[in-house]
Length: 432
Image (cartoon, rainbow, N blue to C red; front, top):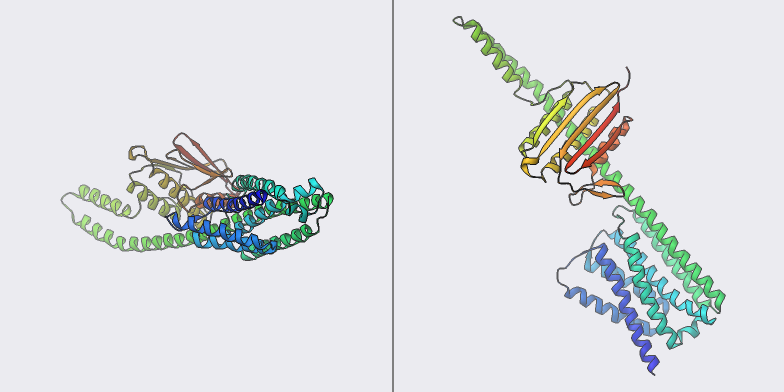
């Protein structure tokens, strides 16, 4: 009688542990929908009680079905995240709970050399098995959040999710059929090997899906950024066109100024100086920065104005190069993104410390571009790559610069020391 009571208590504790394990992973992976803890406490309690009641029916497949449904429902009702990401993680959570449950029972079948039916009917063995299961669950939690939980999985495709779910259900079905046939030590060892192999395979597949997701996301963000650069280029071209039209209009004004100058008979030298001064002022009316490449002139002018608006001291040393071997959209991609990153970084430091230095020159047969700016010393990295410190940004600007420079067989490098950030670009200039 005492053993049965202890067995019931240990089973209840196990059910509680399964959902503690589940909620701990949810907390690490997903964003809660509700601020109050009441909803989560109620859902947790209801899930544990329902699981224990279903366990009393004694149908293993029903237990598995309930676990699958309850974990998915809890995540959808209580947390916010990508549906595909939730399904993937939930599927793995379910398989891990199944693995821990079956393994701890099969261990005793191996040790005792008995069938699983005999092990399941032994209250003492089940108490120990349940306690071992609890320890395995919390070990699994630590491993899961360390190895798998950090993966970005927003961009996975539904067909990959469906394959993983079908594969997991098949594995559970195969494992269940083997469980029903365990009649001795060797059968138990075989089952442990099969289940462990399934678990490793699932983790491996999840890792591959995670990498695919990151690739999908990177490609998606790159395509968006390229579209943005195209739109920005069209804007710059439109500004350039309006600038040329404005110069034509200004040309007429210059004619009038010339007539006025000619009429100044009293002090001709002074009149000519005055006319020249007016012409220079008109020429500088539109852009703060001018060079032979029109697109670069517009990008630099616009970004210098943006920087100075943020009280950033700007210093430029730009050699006047035509840059005709780089297409306009790539000039925009390189310089606009470098400027945007530098301006964002400077905005996070004290006004007195804000500065940006830009230089461009031709050395031998190479185009050398350097940008140096102040920053607050904080950098975020993922797998040795820099990512943005802004929420919901992954440093796409840096990736765009990198891919654009590589397109021209160039080298893009980043250096940082203390509160100084440097971006260096070297691009070979094709021989004409």
